[in-house]
Length: 170
Image 1 (cartoon, rainbow, N blue to C red):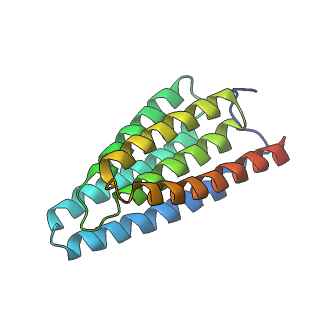
Image 2: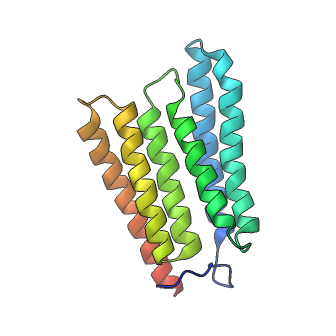
């Protein structure tokens, strides 16, 4: 298992980053609309700024991933933003889904950048643990098994898709 970056002729990051931008951009707009509708207009601005920072970090990582030790700062900053974004009191019961979306995209990105490596595995386990903690905080105990099962199915599908994609590139 290698730990080198995937920045070579086979790396096709731009479509993946465009997909992440569109996915998280739509989540951002949806949360902003529901938050404003439910009377938390003061939360819309800070929420939009935090989402923009989260999406902007993806593109920064695409440009800076070859810098030594950048990945440590990057993944720590993304984890911090995920915790903050998933903890905000939106007007709808979406914090569990939001946490899942944000962490699953991080795992997918790690697999895309680092391939099927120990670093990607470690980052995947870190984000899975973070997701479990966020779900326990944001989802009621009665709904937790159903939400966890749904996320497990979707997350497993996405991770397997990225692993198979990496094997095709190898």
